[in-house]
Length: 314
Image (cartoon, rainbow, N blue to C red; front, side):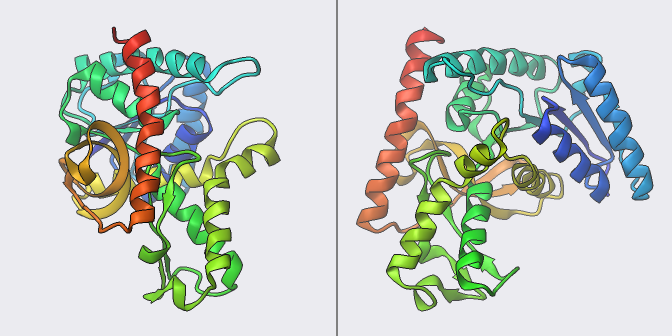
């Protein structure tokens, strides 16, 4: 364990599961939980702290009283936001969560301006843009969690199709976190063996479709709520890579500045994560089809950004 402090703003299913994972693994020395529901956040802090003690972890879990408790955080994960409700338009959800994000970012800017921020709130790519715009922070400091989750979903569906290779599957997904994500079968392997050597084109296409609908499938089954174990674990990998300066490469949502031919728009691409947040952006050689898919994905995010610029930031 390193002497590091992690803040988690928004302690719903994802935030609380993340705190539990970090505390049990002893990834950091302190976790501070912040949520507008004071009784809930206090209960979570107690429960997770007791779990950490059962695991013989040295991580201390506390509940924040106000924004000042975020001081000294090395990493802050933001999961705050509301889910889309019946009768709510996409723009309503976007603008409501942008307002929440702006408030959270102001808190962070005032109390932990040097923290690396991991955004988990949806719509993910637009919320990363909102956080950057609201804070004025450099792009290496604000990172969106999505690609690791989408890649994990792809790996699951590959395993489901093959029936073997558990723990040896490496999948790669680019683009926005939504219907227009871009799974990359040609960058996906099983124990180093290309996917194309193991599955037919039709089987690979089926996996790609399932990957794109992976989150929706869980939402439909749950009826109320959405996935949280996989998102929380994916986020924990990012936190660990940053705190331990692991310089691991993960697909994350970042502000592009010329990479892949795009500027001033958020896209999901492979990045190296270390103590400075985004240490490097990796540019893959995409084929024509993947370039077209990525272009479509960027266009979808651009629509959301245009709405933010005209209705929120103007």
